[in-house]
Length: 435
Ligand code: ACO
Image (cartoon, rainbow, N blue to C red; front, side, top):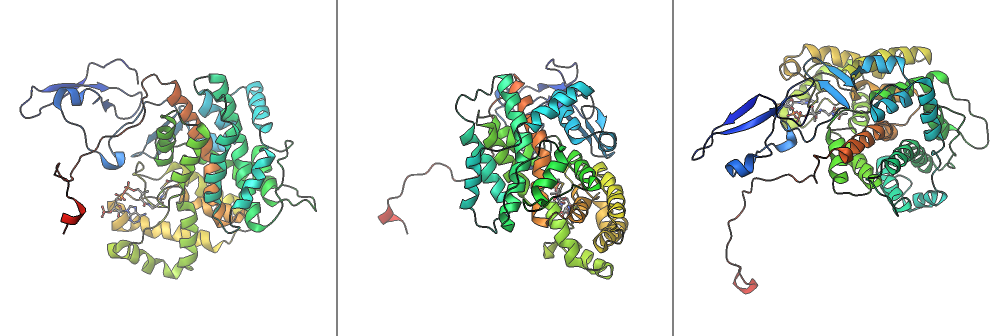
């Protein structure tokens, strides 16, 4: 989308005013947008859009979603191709730089990430302040936010070189912090990162190795995790990404902005759904209970949702869920866990839901969280770490979008308007006179 106004305009009639011509900005793919920036000065009115269901908050070149067709592109490349043919760090490079790397560019990028994986030793003491049973996402919000105390002085977000270092640090250190959160919860010593391992293998090592015996990373597990990371790397202006952009728009520390993104991701309506899906599948317990569970979901008074189903943008099958469904079968077979009762329940649940009028009418399909938990569990990852792994994967998306925002001359501090429906101005009442 360019800044130039296109020949298309939208005409708005407001009672008592001359009709207003609003420019329409054209996209390269997908719907254009009506540029309402001049609306208030022309009409004295704002727009009303709770949940931003119709509002574009920025222009972006990173990710494109066609929710009706179930298409997801990063920098123009299909997610299915990226998940099949790339490594996670290759996708990180693509998201950040706009092009797939050459071999030499990838090697250099991997080197930069690898040599930022350790955290300041002082960080390890921060963990002691948390209860052992703290949720890893709570710990991550705190510890990633605390990076802003370690890298604050002299940080100039307008300097591209400094932004690049911030970017490398975050992609490298968030997995270390996530693994430390897990180790702390089980009372095991923190494992330092190993720079001879690839990104996913290093994370598995930091999660599962102990100092007293050798740990050999299973390459099937590493590849499965790498694929999950790719599938979660970015998803345009979702709740957590918009949070990162909003916090970043104030000029705040990028480490604090990413911590805010982690907080937004934690909610069960967003990234917390992967944990909720697994708990739901366990609660259903067997295929024979699916029908009664779905009746509960359809009963609005029960306040029960089919977790891992539905999406604000996708009104078709989430292409990431399709990749993960296939991957779940492959990974479980390779790990010798072919007969997985949770996978059986999930597949049957999907089959019945996709034929049920309630879900068909509302265009509710499986989203990325529906199958990811089953794979993560097969890798031995505890349920409470699922969203932490999502946060780890999404860090690159957040930081790519943050960089894009800083470089965009049109971006301003994020500051929505409101429709005020409270009291009109009234005289103050002294406490003695209040009845
Ligand atoms: N189960 C049952 N009903 C649902 C579900 C669901 N999972 N999702 C939506 N609906 C129903 C709503 O009750 C509503 O019905 P109504 O029209 O009769 O009132 C209708 O479908 C539209 O739902 P909204 O909540 O208005 O849709 P919205 O776009 O605001 O929400 C969301 C999208 C939050 C993802 C929702 O589908 C949901 O809660 N899903 C379950 C949680 C989940 O899986 N979240 C992960 C999303 S992917 C991600 O963030 C990584």
